[in-house]
Amino acid sequence: DWTPQSFVEETVDGLKEKLGNDKVVLGLSGGVDSSVAAMLLHKAIGKNLYCIFVNNGLLRKNEFTDVLKQYEGMGLNVKGVDASARFLDALAGKSDPEEKRKAIGRVFIEVFDDEATSIQDVKWLAQGTIYPDVIESVSATGGPSATIKSHHNVGGLPDFMKLKIVEPLKSLFKDEVRRVGASMGIDAKLLGRHPFPGPGLAIRILGDLTPEKVRILQEVDAVFIDNLRSWGLYDKVWQAGALLLPVNSVGVMGDERTYEKCVALRAVESTDGMTADWVNLPYEFLQKTSNEIINKVKGVNRVVYDISSKPPATIEWE
Ligand code: XMP
Image (spheres, rainbow, N blue to C red):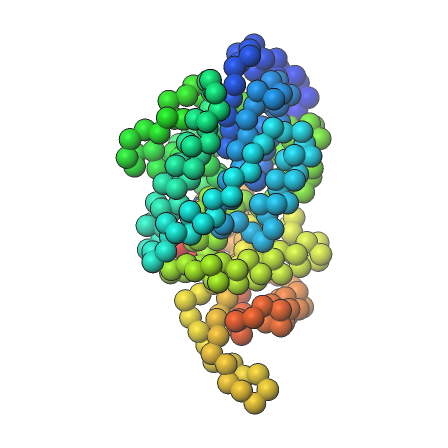
């Protein structure tokens, strides 16, 4: 009978045998899969697991620091690499969604390759690939591994991709991954996190990016997500986030007219991201959240709520 406990025992034993004293490198994304894969490997080989967590500058507000601390608290041998400036430089002037994705994928590979190959005698690359990724071959929601997969044909093969691959979650579905994570004592908040796209806020800022736009969207998103949590709605939603639209609209403040940014909020119910329904959030929640965003976030004077389902709309706007 499959139980999370028996899976952990068998997998850890198997990893010990397979890896011996070898060093393994793994890219953490802050998501469930890479975190659970890291914990399993940590149990098996301890400090010989080298985790790398890259800040691409496109994460949620405070996410890099918070999640890095959490990883350290789990005892992982993790290095946080703040490469925000490199990503933002590569994105400057780009407004096409696929160009933005490509630039982010390329920089991620460069940064990860530098870090991975600076580990002496590293033999293995670990990935948080789960069973649905194996079938689809491209993860819908994965972080680093998905980025790597969809960009591996750009330029030559980076050195870290010549490493042997170890994928301890390859036979599991998402809910099993969560149960395995819980049985190893991983924090429920980390395990229950919504999926977040690898290119992060870059594809939620429609059109070109500036550091100021990233900051505005981080603030808006933080109000939305914090309110979902405090209203007990976070776990009822499959994925949620805010979008910064390339639209200014007229507003009024005191006697003055303003001409400021418009943001959209999106929350969907789904099981796998392939189809999705917009969530019927309470009007009072929307009212309070909209007021709070407009009062708190300078540069925003209008909030709209996305009531489109997938298909025909997609979850992201880019
Ligand atoms: P769409 O917008 O296609 O999104 O309905 C389905 C799921 O995939 C995520 N998504 C991405 N994840 N890199 C990723 O790692 C991407 O480029 C990307 N684009 C969309 C999206 O957040 C949703 O969960």
